[in-house]
Amino acid sequence: ADFRNWVRGNTQAYGQLVAKVKRDGKTLDEEGIYQQYYDFSQPIKSIPSFRTLAINRGEKEKILNVKVDVNETPILWHLKANTVGNRQGYAADIVAAAIEDAYHRFIGPAIEREIRKQLTDIAADHAIDIFGKNLYNLLMQAPMKGKVVMGFDPAYRTGCKLAVVDPNGKYLDKTVIYPHKPASEAKRKAAKGLFIDFINKNHVEMIAIGNGTASRESEQFVADAIKDIKSPVYYVIVNEAGASVYSASQVARDEFPDFSVEQRSAVSIARRLQDPL
Image (cartoon, rainbow, N blue to C red):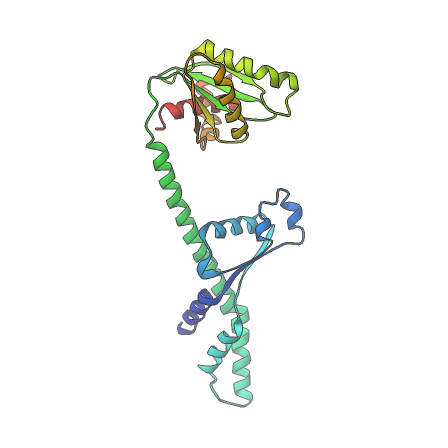
């Protein structure tokens, strides 16, 4: 047990977490998400939690080979010095060979598994803590009461889904516009007028834009369009995390059976601005 603890301590202090791309890893990693880890090495004692989790994901997706690398020379010297010592002869050679074999086949791999598990546990705890704090801040935001709100669920190919709710969160109206490519030029030109008409028709006061795909382009579109509206209309970027989960749930399907998932998501985004809780 003393030897094992010493080996673990030495590996934690001087070892490196090493990641290499697999032979077909680049093909699997079409978007290059793990490119920075194709030839990566960092001391175990200083690797941040987000990198541990990213490397684990790359390994799970069969893109990366991951291992703990440590200079085994001082480890083997320590083990032999405290067992064989200065003894010479056939018996000493057998013991020394057994020590090397035990380290390579049992102790080293076991220590590597322990260290990787420890790194993963620490990273997971850290991620949960950060997620909890972010969720608390999100849910404790002041509610936007007494406003007619439009939920704006951005998208490219399938169009941006719009849904309006009254000050109490009751659904009022919905539509789809196509302000972004690859929509045709005609649809993109028509989008602004349709958007303004929809706002005026429903007396929208606030627009909640989801922060997912096409969010930046949609924000620019909204900011430009509301300049041409006489009554004051404001927009807010809303964290849409969880909106897709809700919109595909049975509760959402029961409330809006004839809506697509994206249309339900637009309603959810609008309600989230009104009251995060």
